Length: 63
Image (tube, rainbow, N blue to C red):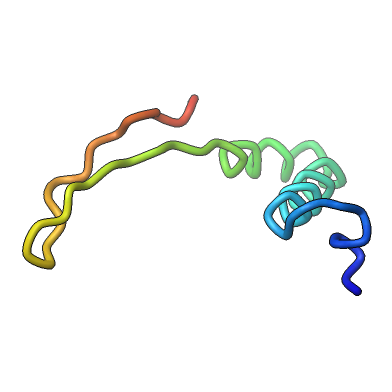
């Protein structure tokens, strides 16, 4: 059994924990460069006839 399953978390939660631990272990210069990678945004595009319309942000990533 996978360790994350034994811990009762999903694979996505597991990868987020690993990414956060990695970013926190970096030295200050690299940590500052990696900080924007922790930001997420949400885009939406309506699909019609196999084509996506223009993507629009629903939630923009904090800068």
